[in-house]
Structures are given as C-alpha cells and as structure tokens.
Length: 179
Image (cartoon, rainbow, N blue to C red; front, side, top):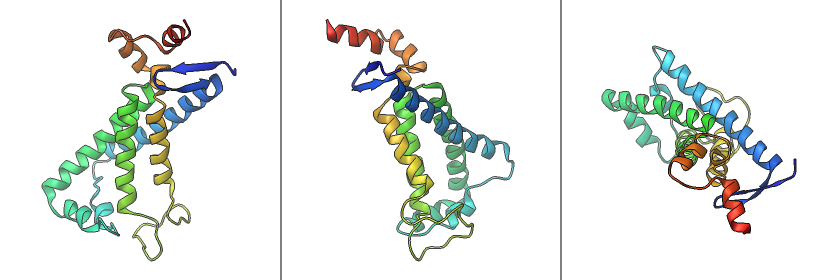
C-alpha cells in the first residue's frame, strides 16, 4: 500500500496518495458533470439570474453578459458543455491536466461573480457561512492540485493516449530512470 509510484514530471507518490488523488479527481468530476447535466436537462435553466446578481469588481462584466440575449445564450451553452466535458475528463482521466485547469478557471469565475466578502449579499442564500473562502474556491484549488498531479496518466484514458503517442507508462519511465 505504501509502494512509491513515479509519475512523469511529478513527485513520487505512494499507492495511497495516488488512490486518494484519483478518488478526489473522480468525486470533483462527478460534481461538475452533474451540475452540467442538470442544467442541460432543465429546459428553462439560464445563468441570467446568477450573472445579474454578481457583485464586486467584475459585476459590470458579468451583468453585461446577462443583458444581451445572444451573449447569454452563448455563455449558457459554453457553461453547460464546459461543465459536462470537464466532468467527463476528470472522471475518465482524459486530458486530465487540461480538464483540471479549465475547471479551476471556470470555478474561479463563479467565485469572482459571487465572492463571500463582508458587505456583499446575494439573492440566493449560500449553504453556509463563508468569509473569503467558500466551497467554490476550495474546489478550484483542488482542481489546481489535480493539474499538478495528472493522475490520468496512471488511471485513466490519458494512459492510453500516452501509449498511442509512444510515451512510456509511468512505471516504464521509472524503470528507465532507475536503470
């Protein structure tokens, strides 16, 4: 269980560390995929309310997206399919680093739209009480960790992609490094 695992370009991981990272990757992927699917299957979903309720330094930017119907339609479509593709990428370990970075960026925009700062209140109450750090920011940070540790190269479609490209598996890379 504590066997060290050498990954390409990332520090050695124990089996427990790798397993933990893969579990977190799949859990976050499921959350993001589900958010996208719910929006896709809801015929009347739109980000308009969320964007119009934006506060803080980018409020004008987000509200301007909601004010123009064509822009709003594009934003809604990109949001839905972005969530679905990011979620699938994380669950399947496909393009894991790209999915992680895209997810972190998307969540960071959500955070900037509704930061939990003193003096800001929103139309919809949050699930809990937050100051500066909320679940969205934490999940964005987790995705940055996933980008730093692309576990799809071990457990996921990234491993197959690397084989097709002729790259050695992480285990083979470790053997070559030792030899």
